[in-house]
Length: 84
Image (cartoon, rainbow, N blue to C red; front, top):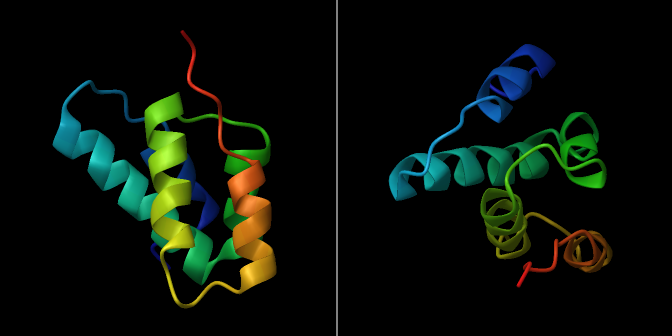
């Protein structure tokens, strides 16, 4: 229930430069990828999170033992390159 579309949208709209807030959003989305992959993957194929949070959520999801190797490879391909 915590990963329904309404909650995903609400959390995606959180904007902050505070490290712990950004980390909380990243953790939320990483767990959403684990628990409700189909509902969540669109947030990464069409990025809506800031680059740091987007990449951190992918990193944390990849670290999960609940995601298979093929999905981890795909998620890695969705990381956003850092702008210089």
